[in-house]
Length: 638
Image 1 (cartoon, rainbow, N blue to C red):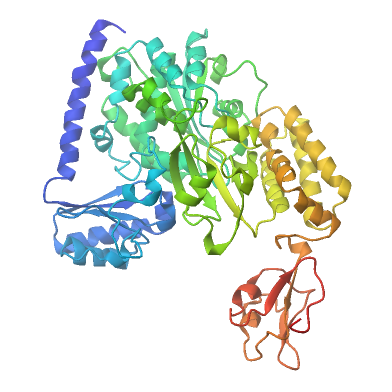
Image 2 (cartoon, one colour):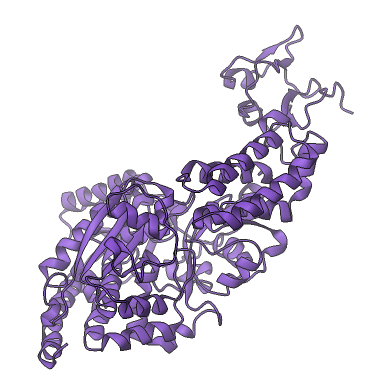
């Protein structure tokens, strides 16, 4: 970059920043109440758009000087729709499970009056103490928000709010550095890719920059397809400009002039907000030719994938971008040497790119000071499954699984016992209770048989059968396999057949050893990451829960009472209340009928094991039981 280019950057960016800060101050001007409503996909699914409209209608109806702003995901997805009201003279108060009626009440009682309606406050303690903001929730002591900092705080469709909160400052700073210096900063930070493999980001950029061939490309991999994972989608929906800024910095560092954001079309809200962000960035001169008056030119195109899980693998993603079938290719050469259209290409995950601006703004030493020696920075997880507080969480690397599940996620609901956590998506592993004090980092999880993956964390309780869980995830990866290599195509199919036999009571003792042998073979011989990691759920459940496999095979019994072919429902005659027909009314196949004494009986041939009768039976009777293996129902209290 020439000196003239450097000198032009500062005034160009300062002009943007001054306008953005004036805009931001106007939103939060003295004396004005501000209502923020979370409208990411999790919020919209819970009815946030109706709540947003209800607030706007009521504010307009009462002619109040109040600003209603839609923001992204606040992380507390279990309490959606979430609303924060910031009124002068009061702390910022967070309300959960808001509906349009509650919205109208809050405007009339609190915004227009002085009643904060504590009964609707999220996080009110038993003593009726008020927790005024999400940052003061007990879980906050374990969290450290870097890439989630803006999520739920700014309007993702307003670039000026992003700039006013420090957005694009890192780009301006990077453009005044030599590209090699930017790469060195990222290398020294210790940032590793958050897409699953954990490859050093700075090293990948350096390889790309030093590789021969032009043009060079930069790709953002937002093809998040893991069951139970929604981190990348939520970041794009809540803070899309942070992803664009990371791409711009990576492109400047590597010498790329064209970029692509690969998002699956199944994420319509993420697609929409990326499109808005791209238009806004181009309008302000942050994309296109001679960005901020410099000699650096870069543009980004949005590419919508068709939802194939295998396209999360970088070579399959490249093939899809090129218009070919999304199948992996043999490596080396790696994409950083020969990628899109045979040219040097960097592919980074959404989270990886979002970290970059923080590293440039705060320095490599600052980022390296967070986390552990081999895993710097933070980890972002999507908490799902059998956990009280589902949602997004960002914690420093080295935080234990126990802290995330029981302190941040508030543990297991309904008084059930923790059994396992599936971490790393369908290619991850199932870790037992004995692993709860394991620190979360790349190396510790790999040693335990799991992986960091993209950040999915599915919690399982005592009612989950680990054989069925392994079967479910193998079925997913087998279905999503592109079929290119024999190990993955046939190996996962054979593993699925064995697991299916075991869950149906047809398994043999030698099947367990064959399953282990197959899983190790598929892991060693598959071409890409999908096949190499597909056996992880099998290997970890065999490692930690082998007794459950043996119970299925030796005893024809499912210890968790989950496998339909190994359980049966019965009604205990001595507990059944003759005047109660709750179970009869809920049986969709009419398998339950009363005998001559009005005692209900289940026809085992008709029963489809739907569990409705067990749920419907009143607690005071507790007459319906689930048994494994199926046996003769007790006829007396004994």
